[in-house]
Length: 403
Ligand SMILES: [Zn+2]
Image (cartoon, rainbow, N blue to C red; front, side, top):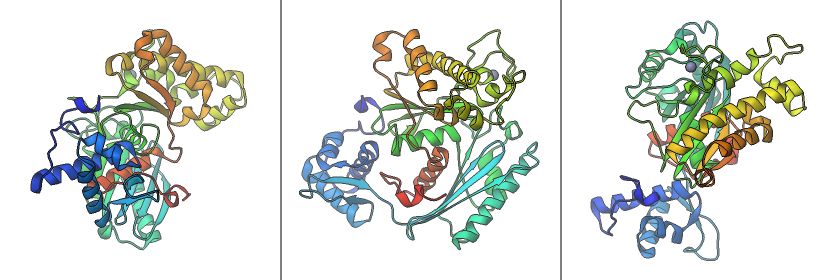
């Protein structure tokens, strides 16, 4: 399957120097990104180059500090992984009520996190002010000026179309029609890379988590909103409109509750965190937050369990259609609702199995996301690194362990 994706690893490969050699190096890097830590034999089979050629390229990449050869019986049989040892990056995640930020210095191996509540969120300037505070705070903590940051990535909880314009969304209506790359770069006085939060989480899970080795991977984020990102051979699939994967407004109950988009019974209107909490209007001891709701479900509260199970069935209805059309080999569910564990995932799975033919459902594995620590922020880090031409096969512990 991997070979039939044009423009990636399917190109004919011949050993040579100059442009062809650069292409071969790029293919080896792509293969290492796809597999994660793996043997040179695996790289050789993947890219169709001879083992001596791969060995020579790995040696070149090792000398450049781009790969690390892990200890093993001999150099050719032991695992190789992508590493990055330089660069100072900031990843920011702009949500509905909070901006979270992470600074990572790969040379000094230090990482800092900060978060800032958003006030005046009815206008995007409130969001910008919070972004500014987080960036200033991270610069102060790290002792690195903004100008000396290698690159900055911002993830947004809103769909971004092919032209870079924010499409109408439930979570961040105050950004609709804006070009966040321009708005945020102008505000900070430094270029930023911008990505939708679910796409960023999908690319992080593909590179470092539940999507590793997947040829067609889908990540579904189930938090205040519901969104998804699709990764084909290491690249986010956007479609012609740029907003492929925006599953939140697929209608699952035509006579269901109203949605902000003007339809009734969209997935977002029945299965997002906002929608689930709204169902508690007439219930005693309503949960105060989505986190609280999941905690109640984990404690076997029957109302909370019911609500989360139903949300899983609704998501399963949508995924059955998406899986039939897209044919992903893996779908990972992440976000706050995934914390409910089997309760939610089993409901998703049972509906998917019920609604699509056996041959399709058995070709797709449904799992939980495996990056528990802010997958959107990790995706932002990955994108900031990519903007600098860097990649790594594993998130170092010293980044994950920061609180
Ligand atoms: Zn809708």
